[in-house]
Image (cartoon, rainbow over all chains, first blue to last red; front, side, top):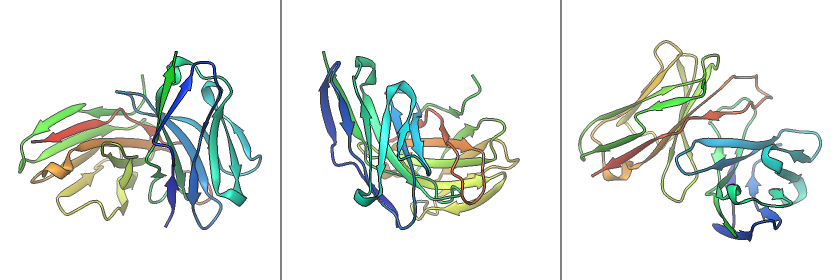
Amino acid sequence: AQSVTQPDIHITVSEGASLELRCNYSYGATPYLFWYVQSPGQGLQLLLKYFSGDTLVQGIKGFEAEFKRSQSSFNLRKPSVHWSDAAEYFCAVGEGGGADGLTFGKGTHLIIQP
Amino acid sequence: DTGVSQDPRHKITKRGQNVTFRCDPISEHNRLYWYRQTLGQGPEFLTYFQNEAQLEKSRLLSDRFSAERPKGSFSTLEIQRTEQGDSAMYLCASMTSGGPRVYNEQFFGPGTRLTVL
């Protein structure tokens, strides 16, 4: 069975500093990987996704993520965070075709310090 | 706005009552998913539809839960004889299916927050 681990429950970063959120997955084949962001009262919004090809993927809002098969990781990064980035971030894995839905990690709560 | 909508946004009910939630997906999307999200957790898959056919159900979906998508458009999720453990955010998502080797983006609604007293 596929699973996703986000080891950091909370992360605090100063505004303007760089950010890295960790995600490790367990999946037998080549996974379909996603990062979503959830703000209070809002639905989940897709930041970026990886299916195949270039292992460094660019997303919206200045985010990027790197797929590392050898480490089973798909870490999310941003070079300079803004106060509006404070939110809950979820890593998710899915199998081709979309059956069984997405398997999400427990999330990382990002706090931005002024 | 033509995104995914859910109704109601909040529902408070007493233990033992039945509740029904509605999801209106993006109109051209043939796939519709239901997830449940409890406090401090990520969303957990419950079930999904391709058009009007319910193709997969998670073991989380007990006999008290039933979902329908009668005309392949909107969907309803009903919980019978609610229990306090059913308190959660219920999320709906939709997408277009793209074949066995494709995983298109799922678009999520804002969710229905259920509180069972």
